[in-house]
Image 1 (cartoon, rainbow, N blue to C red):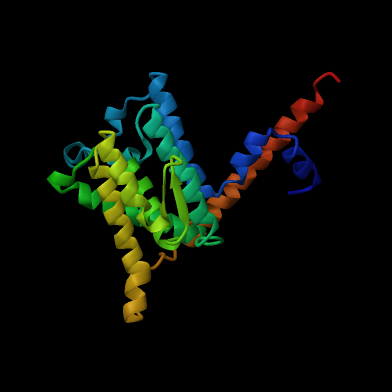
Image 2: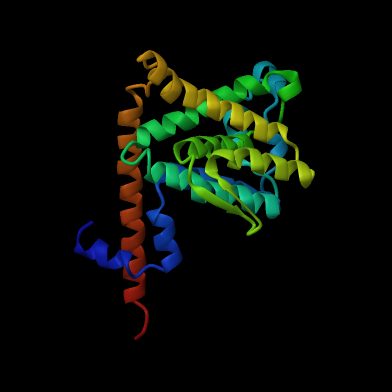
Length: 246
């Protein structure tokens, strides 16, 4: 940032600065999930048009359903808040920890997870119309394998190692009556990714799953675009504040 942008940045509200400090992929995923729920409550978004229905995809060519179903976590509720916190904590910690300066690899992990979930959801017994919760659980599972010995306290009642957290969250969903298929799908996809990228290479010495080369220029393009629009935003806000009476 130049000097004007630097000073303008620190004139922004603290919450906005916190939001801007989040890593890009987790921030984008969480933002889209929040936006879809807000639009749903405003009556501007019908989840039925975003749900994963393979018949509509293949017979009516509604291919957007293969993507949009990942960005709806349900209406505002306790469960919605918990899923969002999981993105904000475990997704962000992954992106800022093991995937630091590896944004393309992190995005590829998300894409691979989404493709795996779409394949699993094609099995009738595992079908679920929205795979956003499953993608969140995949992030949670990968995080638990990257930080297996971290101590986690659940609701101030139970302390356990992070390795067991995905299973503990699944049990809680069973207790509170939430469907467990989305959780199980996320755990399966997360284990598949971790096996192909960590466990199998350690055992065989061969990498099976690599980030495609095209991901790197794609991430560079996104970064430049986001930086450009963010610079415009803070500059315009700063100019408006200077016009306010002192």
